Image (tube, rainbow, N blue to C red):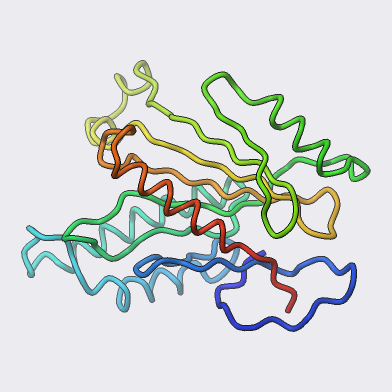
Length: 227
């Protein structure tokens, strides 16, 4: 369902379902396909995108840093693919000497099994099922209704106590935003765009808020591709 470039698309036949989608990414962000071409994309990122390393890392350790980053991205990609992921997006270039801790995943959703149910009914059900710690609102994307949900996630204290020290150190509270979008002209098919960031460690900070606003701006460029 992904289209990595932003070239002008030919007009779609009336009533035709899209073959993919497009997003405009900020500088330094990359797309990693999860269904095919994952290995090739990681190789390209490792050698052509990650030319810089964060401040404080000695030059002799640059390659080790890149390989560590690749292993982390591979782990994230495998988890995303198991959950229906189509594409993983994340920043791979440092800003101000540090890497942004943020990413989002575009995935197919196992909802809308009743193909006769109109998208509005499914969206209303999703909004009604929203938990007390979540905030769901109806938005418009590509001329159709969609759902935007935001919430905060914190690691389970009991599970963390028995986890390795490295996992405990890496487990941070995160601010999450999810968009749920019906596929145009394809009743019963849905995709989600799921964003997660620990921000700067303070989920209420201006920095964390700026990352959420950046994600919302990226989603605002979403459009279907028909080529």
